[in-house]
Figure 1 (cartoon, rainbow, N blue to C red):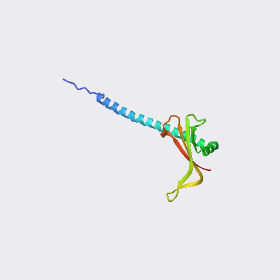
Figure 2: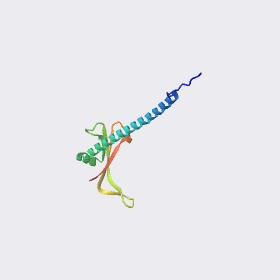
Figure 3: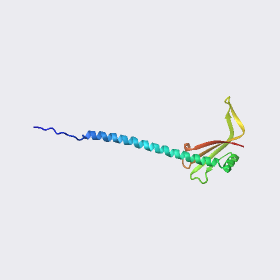
Length: 132
């Protein structure tokens, strides 16, 4: 007579399916973690660029040189690998009738900060208004 055996283990197919599900889960988890790390790096760089730009604009010597020269670019002293460029133009605003009006005695400084060797789209720009 044939006796039936009671198999209590998993079949090979069940083990393979569970490994595939586990692999997909780990893949999604690692992608999420790596994406959050990239966002963190970008936020850190943005904060650092804002600090550098605000330090430049807080320097009366830099602002005076910017207003006198009306535009320039160069490297930032005491800041490794950071470059700046700025443009100075008369301040122009839109009035209620959507006409462009130049404000007498006011200038607009557009300061852009970037790291050495980074692409053009990775610039951080700030705009400030100053009296002449």
